[in-house]
Length: 66
Image 1: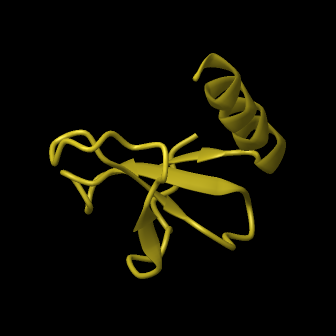
Image 2 (image 1 turned 180 degrees about the vertical axis):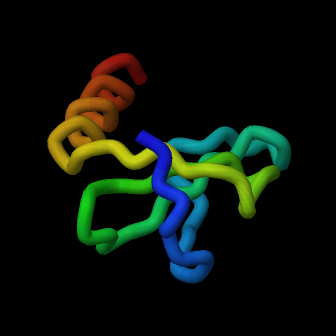
């Protein structure tokens, strides 16, 4: 789902982003409809909004594969 109404402030680099400058995901905490994620190289582009449960499942899968 793309959310074109996501506010521009409050974004932070995801702790799961790589250390390379060109591979950063940003997430927006405390969004009312889920967890928006965007490419830091395109901050004015669209964001994908995951459900809270979907994002939690994704993070658990990342931790399990690490």
